[in-house]
Image (cartoon, rainbow, N blue to C red; front, side, top):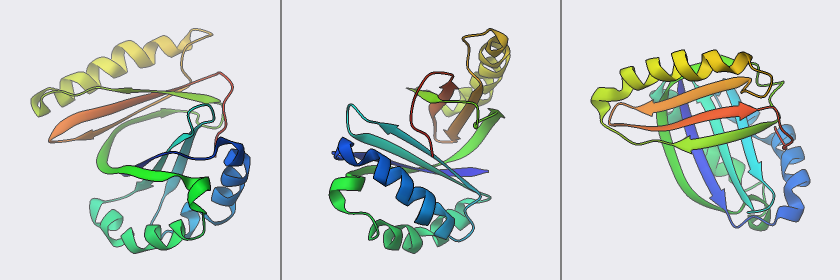
Length: 162
């Protein structure tokens, strides 16, 4: 599985609820070959991260036009300015995203040679700890073979989800 991760900033936070509604109604479901979507919204900072899942990098490349067309359905003040788009292999996807109410995203960078070892350590130490009442309910990792970039843990605290 592969993920296209788009980051946005400069959104009008007062439009977050309308943005979530529009994404649910006309968002990533209109992107060919998309297998799923996770939206992370920070109301205080006016930032957002959209993670769309695909079976292959080729499917992501083939969907580029659909993403550009979809952006036209969202006013600039609502979606914000796209600051980056990354494509990575999903190395871990574990847990129940429906129960998670918030996400903690940590960025880790390192040698491509350490990806497998890092993923193993994350699975054995972090995922195992989620059985504690305050621990995470979902964990995912996305990695590029050029460098390991990001681990996300969704935790049971209040937040907006799509």
